[in-house]
Length: 426
Image (cartoon, rainbow, N blue to C red; front, side, top):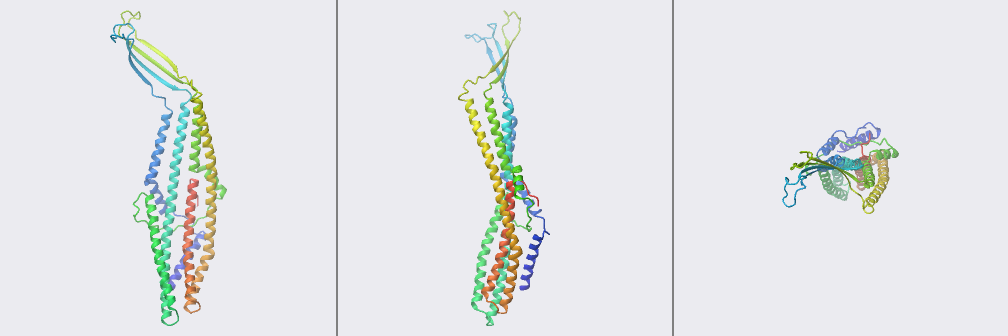
């Protein structure tokens, strides 16, 4: 059992050394990518956002279209008493058509709606990035809980082995019964820990399944080991990338553009709308008509008069001006917020990187050497059982902490990619 345990520790040392030597430089490219694709194809919330974006796109040509023309049909110039068409010479059936033309406004109306559609498009993109980030983070969570459960089960086996050693020493009079009881108590504590880890594992699996539009209880397991890959970009470069491609920022820019277009359109409301019309009269009584049977044509031009501009158009200009000002301020605040979030994620990644390096280069080696030394010393009665348990606990804590830090690093990187709006090069 000792030889098997030693081989396991050597394997762990070899794998973690590969991480830091750079011999393993590829991140998850198979299993995780497949899960991300599945989520993008089947997640109902993303489908809803895509449909909403397409609905806004369909509004753009509507906003730039002329108002519907008006068709008119009526009896004209008929006697009040009889309503007959063949009594008076000017009586007839009149057909008319008119068209309202908003002067210098259609282009702005279309531009405003296009900006709204772009905003909705970025909202869809932001949700897509959020979904990708959530799949990755829950995937790393699931990996961590699986790994923690695996390490805890191995540690339980190790403790059972130590318990047997303590029992043998006690049976030959070289150990204490208290050592055997202490080992059994530690094993019982680990059994409680295993139950908790299994619960966490199921919860992470359920969250990931829901993102994939699957039943929460469906079987799902991480089969690939994630790897540490350092960032190539510095803080300033990451901020520049975020300012260029952050969906949240681009969405706010589109909203600001829409507010500006609305403000310009409000000022155009001082201009009247033009109305053009034409009508054709089919005359029923032409006996006294000098034109001998000619029907009549009429043409007209109309303008609406914005006479109440002081309480309508001018207030609309004020309203849209303040809305534009508010949108510009929000854009400025969003820009600062995105820079801050990038910096915070970057600092957290650097901290996690240093903690991982410390765990791998120092703590891991020390914990393993300390445990192997304590185990050998206990077998020849050079240390007590409590010291051996302390060394074993330190090794267990190291393995759990290292996996937790690695999962935390990868999750933070996924969050940073969501903020920036694009995957970072490895």
